[in-house]
Length: 489
Ligand code: SF4
Image 1 (tube, helix red, strand yellow):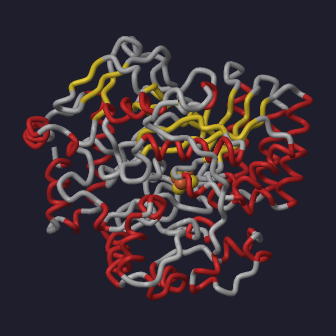
Image 2 (cartoon, rainbow, N blue to C red; image 1 turned 180 degrees about the vertical axis):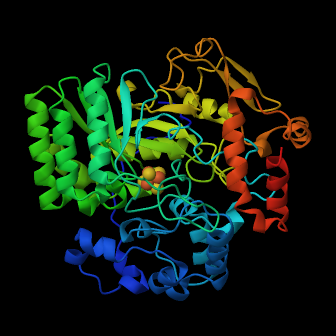
Image 3 (cartoon, protein in one colour; image 1 turned 180 degrees about the horizontal axis):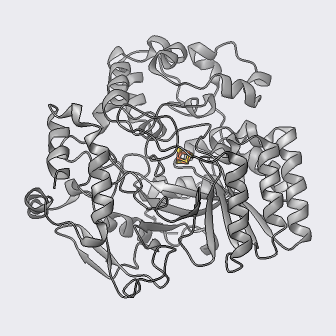
């Protein structure tokens, strides 16, 4: 064969040696494989990070991390040992080379964001909002989002075993940060689940439930099993997907004997009733796919789940190259039997501009990854368009590349548009990161961002303005001054 733009090579998965890290030099394999040990040793602040990495990292990194947590972060820190162990896996002595490698590491770039990662010109898009997909607006019961005609999202809890810096549910998920006061569920978990089941009983057109959060790995297993069992008792529910990034972030949870046995009970019932039970996970970098992750996926297949699928996020500086996306997809497919399914463009939440890519970049990457993987395992890059839903990135109706405004249409009503006569004829807008636009487009945004809010986005923009008020104490910072000015329309 002639030279190809991407060279496929089968690679063995590698579990990096955690004893190379000073804080874990004495940790045994038995401890490492114990989910309770993993949970108890998660890194939640820079002091604990220093306890693991010590003086390998220069002081400036710890200061950069603390400044981000204080002034920019929409998510608090929570990093399982499993994930920290996949950063900078090459043997490397302490010093500036290690620090630079740590700064550049793709997993670090989205799990441990630092202040210097963020843009200072446009840290947030003018239309960025806390609940950018309006999932909360579409709640039909607390935590139950009904956006598409036949499927719902059930958010059972608001915590995860790991917190991703770019989390699209930053409005609700995780601990509050100095920048973001999180929403809190009002109902008790048992009442919330009762209300969800009652809605699904009353709406037989819903056939598909994504059981999510947060991450279902943080729900006590008996409670998750009870909820899924109730779903399995509903004749209209034909697809159940359990959403858990922990299959990668803390695989020890999923290969533990009690969880594996519980999944087997659910999968056996699902199979006997002709229901598809699958697990959806969230992996963004090939180095995260280790033998422990493959072991967790294998445990799920042996327990009887129909599939384990990956829904990654396309992130600038993490995986925005065809080689990174293909390396990850092959690691998932060859190494762990996980289906590379979707890559989402990063949603328009505050402080995320340095992670977001333009739609044009996403289209180009989709083109570049075609033809290497089997068709059924070629991930689709999708944009989750506010008020619309997932769209393949080539499905747009129009695209102003100077201002970075793409327009999209849809073919169904969400649960908040039952009486909206224009829901199916209106076009909906999505916005590229301003810094990726030509100078003319950037100048246009600088001039017009204050007054160009489309009516159907007004509520969302006002909500964003309210959240930014909470960050008003940063007004002396040039980056935030720009943000504050734009949001004061
Ligand atoms: S695992 Fe999912 S829900 Fe949890 S922080 Fe990450 S992106 Fe958000």
